[in-house]
Amino acid sequence: MTDLRVWAPHAERMEVVGDEQRLSLRAEDGGWFSGSHDFNEYMLSLDGGEPRPDPRSPWQPRGVHGPSRVVDHEIFRWTDDTWKGFPLRDAVIYELHIGTFTSSGTFQAAIEKLDHLVGLGVNAVELMPLNEFPGDRGWGYDGVDLYAPHHAYGGPEGLKHLVDACHSKGLAVILDVVYNHLGPAGNFLREFGPYFTDRYGTPWGDAVNLDDRGSTEVRNFFIENALGWLDNYHFDGLRLDAIHAIYDQSAIHFLEELAARVDEHEKRSGRTLWLIAESDLNDPRVVRPRDAGGYGIDAQWSDDLHHSLHALLTGEKTGYYSDFGTIAHVAKALRHAFVYDGKPSAFRGRVHGRPTEGLDGERFLGYLQTHDQVGNRALGERSSALMDHDLLKVGAALVLTSPFVPMLFQGEEWGATTPFLYFTDHDDPDLRKAVREGRRREFAAFGWDPDEIADPQDPSTFERSKLDWSELDDPRHADLLAWHRDLIRARREVPDLGAGGMKAVDARFDEDERWLVVRRGTATVLANLSDAERTIPVKREPGRLLLSSGGEISGTDPSGTDENITLPRQSASIYVRDR
Image (cartoon, rainbow, N blue to C red; front, side, top):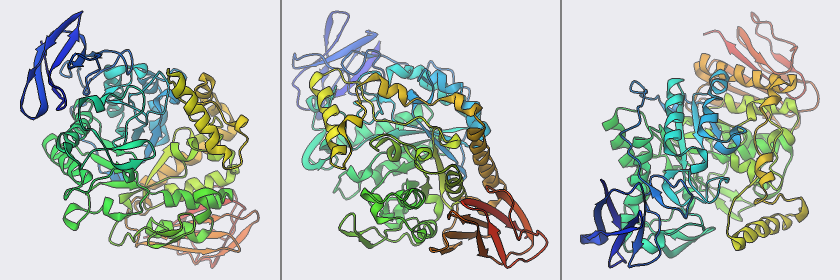
């Protein structure tokens, strides 16, 4: 028998439906219904209405409109008993999308590529959302059954095998979760209770109800979901999508409560657990400790470093990139994480952000690419399509030697040429049309030819977005992969190149000559961003040249104290002085 407990304060009665039978659940105080059943697959009927999936369904093998299936989490035989995790500051993260990471697009297929990640040197994998979403293909940000691993990827058991395999190879696993909205198709939560509120609006409709009437159980629903991923699936951390769209005026903010509950779970489990936020607010309160008035989140994505590097290396000045584009912006991002820390933003038309004083770099993730910054472009172009091969190496050097926790997006390490496009698989004709036309209108407003915009519903859009692993046989791609491996190895071998204090970062630059010098303790990173050779005034104590992306370099006598170093065009070099 399976015990079942469902919160539905708006219902007068509830039945569990399975095997052509209907069993009544007992009404309890607080809007709860409970009972037991022996169905393998089941649905719930509120007040005799059309059966719906369980809001806490652990598995939806036939999609968002199908029946829920029972899962016994005690059956799976984990082999990671000795795995305890490691501090986030030691992580090098690799973001991937299960459906496009391999040609098969399954959890099992991803396991077969883990040795590549180990060889690259990353030690943490961040999976884009994989709870049940409409159809067989999608990014996962329009999910609805938050407790159920996506059926097309391999379901609950397949996900457990993937996490277990990652741990066996020394890889931590982070799951991207979406608590700011739910998708439009298969979203039945509103029928069960006050899960949404019209007090706030989001780009995706009504906001999740975290502070209005009935919000106590709504908050518990999301917090218990987070703890379930950490407990039942052994995830090492969660990435919280777009927390700027999580609205809560409670005395204890939802994020603060979530962080406290995860900290308690960490102590009980003996495993190191992470919470990482995506935020557009440039508000350090997100990652400040709770006893200092913050939410206590472990780290957050730092888009300002991406914006600064992307605008500088590509020359793009449209949209939010219009606020960036100078070497000074990159230097400030490396020293303070936020470029806009209380200064006017022309793009936003207002002052934006707040200083990060007192925070270390390990509180921020640094990156050149993410799924957002690639996939939300009209043509889904990666950095490899927007900048020269040599500048890709410079960008990688500045990210992987930064004081932040570095993150790569799948295929970035070899300069993958396949795009990462926006794709969906809705079966509702009206929704299919709305997604298709909305995407085209969005980019037509920026001057794109609507006919150039890939149809998200076309299966070929999804197929084109899959990584082409045969590219690794190409010498040019292999060269970039080797550079990333060398940088990650250097980061591990030289303590001053790891995540740490931003106050220790000394950045000098020349906008006209287009060079940047970043000193971090014993390590010096030099970048020539120009199209010509540059002589950079750097007094160097005895040491060694650790890495160079540009071949021969003048003024590199390891035993000398040269006053100048000449770097080839579009190149980066790393020096380490003797202690």
